[in-house]
Image (cartoon, rainbow, N blue to C red; front, side, top):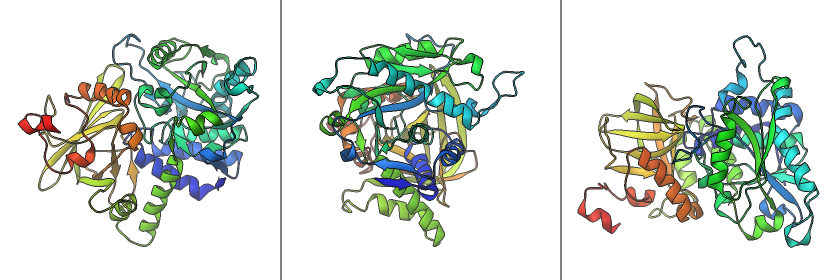
Length: 434
């Protein structure tokens, strides 16, 4: 067990902002939740997967949202996962109510409490042991919103958070999670409204047997006037035996975020190049011929083009330097980077794509998300191999390809290390041999 105090949490915040691949919420929002965590406790308890006893139970608390004008039956069911900036804004034209620590405490733990109550009345459980209470939480994804929301729930309930998550990055669909492709029931799940108005708090329990159906039902519920297009949830219940033997998570990702943040901080403190220091750290365990991280590009943002498609924000971020231009295409998170000359209708020259990570870092070592970038900023675009297990699960890759198709890419998933071996054009006759 490790104790995460202020410095460790700040490092995790910066590391999570980097690993989130442009998504997951802003660093400012994460900082606010971090401050609230430390108002409640001096430290967050972090435990390894191995420290969860077989008979103990864990749960995944998370938040998400969906626009009200899109039918839930729309084919590509993507949710906007993570906390909305509306958490910290006034609720309604005539309302002076803003979210504060007591509001988040009341809202964030409601799905946790409801699910715990439901399961305590359930009689049949695997491995012949009954449910008593939740002993730990696990984050849905790595990002400033859902990672720190899970930590907040953990300190609110005086239980630890497990050093893992479902993706190793932020994601725009529940289908992209290891939680979702493992044999873990998605039911029951619980959801509550995100509001500081005590008269408008609502909660529901959701019983579905497939993740795709869960996505649709969650979206439909969020679109009601009671939920105002967002909610906080609890799902993916599992015991320690399941956690250790079925491997439904990506392990050690909170520790990785902490190490990333620490490397950036220490490089800055001693005047080293933080980009070089981070690449050296990320490639430290691999050989020179088999790197895990790549400097894809460094240049100035010359254009940020935002459009709405379906449930998601499509963003094209165009960067240029003296030699070339690249674009990073976004569906809430960065899903593909390419050398195609902007503007373009289809992508012929990808240089990295999800599930591999496409991350932003300023020259002074500050990780940024898509909520923070601006035209005129200089950024290093760093590509990072996704966790191996998520790169070769067919259903996860199919989910990424659905999103990539919406962005104009119609080819297969190509691992980042293959793309970095040279230019690849979809029209090249040798492409099919990859």
